[in-house]
Image 1: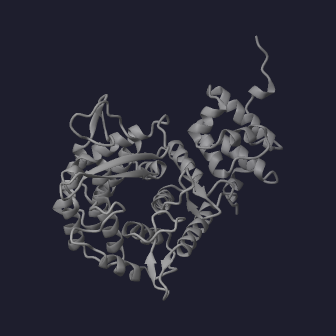
Image 2: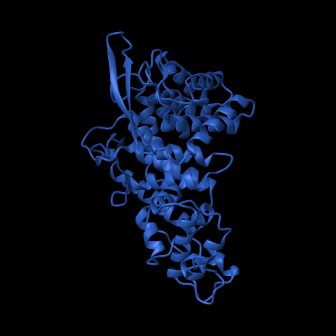
Image 3: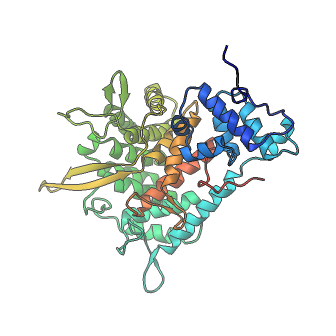
Length: 428
C-alpha cells in the first residue's frame, strides 16, 4: 500500500497553531482531490492563477470573501473558511471568532463610487460662464458634449449617489435638445437606444413624465429595431421604469422574445435575428442584456410565465463557466430615415457588467460564475482615473455607467461578492 504523506491529510482548523502554510497545504490538497489545475480553479472561483499560487505556497492568505468562495467551490462544509480565519487570528480561532474578521467591501465600494463622482465632475464640460453643458462620449478626448453621453453621465451620478452638481440643470438643457424626431446619436441619426438612455435620465430627474417618455420611445422604434435584441432590450429597460403595465412595454417584451433563436434546444439571443442569417451564434452579452430587461419587467409584473421561463432558461445557460465575458462590438447599419443609403455605427458592449446584472437577479445565485464576471469587470477599472477604461485606453462614459450599475446590483443582492478593486479590501 502506498504510504500517505502529510500533504494528503486534511489540516484541521482546531489545530493548536494554524499558519498560512497550513492553509496553503489544505487548499492544494482540496484542489488536487477535485482533479483541477490551478488555472481551472482560479477561473471557476474568479481570481488570477497568481493569486491562487500565492495562497497555496502560504505567501498570503485568501481574503474572507475568497475563502468563502473556495470553501463553497470545494464543498468543504466551512472547514476551509474556518482554517483561513484561524490562521488570520491565531490568538483566538474558536468558531465564535470567525465573524470578527469580515471584509468591509461596502466601504471600499463607496470609496470607488465617490471617486467616480469626482472624476465625472472634473470632466464635465462647462461654458465660459461656468454653466455645465454635459459630457463627451470618450472622456479623455477634446470633443463637445453629446446628448447620449450627457444622459449617461446624469444616470451614472444618480447611481453612485454623488450630488456634486445640479443634475436638474443638466437635465433641463438635455430636454431642450429634443429634435423633431427625438435625440440624435453620435452618427447624427435617430436611434432608439439613444432615445431610451435620454428618456431614462430625464424621467429619473423628474424632467419628463412617463406618458411623454413612452410616446417618445414608441416614435423612435422602427422595423429594423425588431431584429436587434440590443435595441429592444435598451428601450424595454426604460419602458419598464416608466410604466411596466403600458401596452408598449408588453409589445417590447413580445418583440424581444421573438428575436431568440433555437440553439440545440435552448432559446437564446444572438446579435441579430434577420432573414437569411448564415450560422448565427448565441451571444453572451445580448442574452445577458435581454435577461436583465426581462427581470426588470418581472419585478413589476407576475402575469407572464412565458417571460419568467425565458429568463430562467437563458440564465441557466449564462452560468456555464466556459462562456467568455470579454467585451464585444456590434455593427449597427441602419437605413436612413430619408431612404438614402444607410448609417453605420459600431456599438461596444461591456459584457461582464451585463453578466453580473443577469446572474445577480437569478433565483439561485451562481456565486463562482458571478465572481468570475466581477473579476473581469474589475480588470478594466483604472484606479488612477477612477473610471473604467476600454482595452485601447479610451474612457467611454457608458462603460463606467455599466460598471457601477452592475456593482450596485451585486451589492444589493449578495452579502460578500468581490465588490472592491483587487488589493483594496479592509478588515474590521
